Amino acid sequence: MTSRSYTVEEGGRLNNFAIEPKVYVDSTPRTGFTEYAEKLNGRLAMIGFASLLIMEVVTGHGIVGWLTSL
Image (cartoon, rainbow, N blue to C red):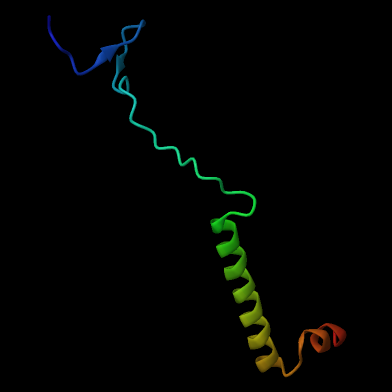
């Protein structure tokens, strides 16, 4: 009995990908009130707040003043 490291399909073609790799599936939930969702929400809120502060420093108006001057 010989061991081959390749297989041949029905049509005689060489099948180099006959051995499937192990697939890692992350089963942790990514929706709802999870720790991941809360961290992402907090980080996005901090980015938004900092960008509003920077806009106020640069333009001299707050968000309401900036929106009414359009």
